[in-house]
Image (cartoon, rainbow, N blue to C red; front, top):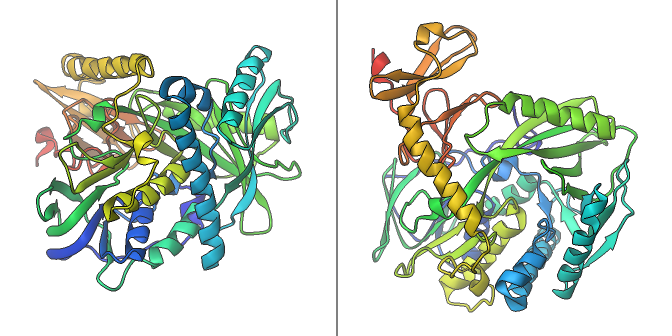
Amino acid sequence: MNESYWIASTPATAFEPAPEELTVDVAVLGGGIAGLNVAAALKAAGRTVAVVEAARILEGVTGNTTAKVTSSHGQLYGYLTEKFGEEKARLYADAQQAAIAHIAATAERDGIECDLVRTTSTIYTEDDSETEQLKEEADAARALGLPVEFTTDTSLPYPVAGAIRYDDQARFHPRKYLLALAERIPGDGSVILENTRALDVDDGDPCVVTTDRGVLRARDVVVATHIPFLDRGLYFARQFPMRDYVVAGRLGERPVEGMYLSTESPTHSIRVTEDGEGGLLLIVGGEGHTTGRADDTAERYERLEQWTTERFGVTDFTHRWSTQDYTSTDRVPFIGRFRPDASRLWVATAFGAWGMTNGTVSGLLLADLITGVENPWSEVFDPQRVTPAGTKAKTFVKENAAVAKELVTGYVTPGDVDSVDDLEPGQAAVIRHGVKKTAAYRDDDGTVHEVSAHCTHLGCIVGWNAAEKSWDCPCHGSRFDVDGKVLQGPAVRDLQKSEARSD
């Protein structure tokens, strides 16, 4: 069974579902790092809040992160300076540094034992032809006031051609930190509601949130569900999903100081964490691909473990998991007003794989916006901003063209097999039934699980993810289990039971 170290090493939560009727000042939809930071900040400001989570808090994207607390977001700052200008690039950098400081200060002030360690974060290359590019990136980041320098000295057990080292960054155990944050929220009219899926929002006065449990009314609503489940604003077309795989293993005698991200393709993310037994686990992520568009997902874990063994000598692997991230077309998150005309509806999304700092920034920024406090970060993260010319226009066109292709070809191409009877134990396939298709999986016991293959978001045909035994949508990243239950949005409704097996 695939399970992240962060989830496996902490207790499960057990908050109650929503009652049929509830009224609060602010409804926060989503129980990850962004939602909990927003809720904790607003509760501290005197607001009553309700955190609404479809499953259990901190078991989604936040529970499956690599948990780097850093402003080192790949080779980003030269790009931001060129496309957005130095002022906005500096605002982005300042926000990330403020998030690091906020997490460290909160942990110290409240005595939160979350394995927080101040450390370095390094982007490195093994290719001599890339060193000049890294030097330019280091110059750009330094010009924005970031604590960075170019170096060739690392603690990696293999040589590098060049690297950018960010000082005074951090790593921590995200669930230990955020579970402590969650403890502050319930009481005095505020609640955390688990196993409650938000289905719709009417942003009137008050706002009305329709859930699968009942109705929630609030003066303001924050949509922090990783990707908005509301199609208004077209956020699903302004960002694209990527899945990455993670393995953890006992490090042994080779210490690794700091956190690392390679420039190779596919990239590799590297860090350590305390294993709770006096030793260290090495956590390595990589093998990323667009969600729903890879047919070798099971092999990606194997390749990642092989790379980790070859580079670090790790052979005792204890955990493996995967994660999903959305990146905006201009590489900057959307944090702010959901639509220009929405005075009480807010959003935080598209963190681009850097959710530990950007999720914290979301909490600080949205709490200010909702309580009427001016915040200079709002300009750079504004969801209504005009995308600078030439930023990610090619990516935007490419991704949406790929979605359009999936919408068309998914319907007209044949299924993978002709009949459920052709499936072997452990095998899954998309099967055509007239003009419709079903997603069928025969488990190891021989039981067939068959549901509609049409994603309930916009109707794309889902694809099989063998590594996680899930049906993943190649259009906007919705994911479903073998019985069609929603695992990840933007879809909010389960895949329909197959009419071919309605008995």
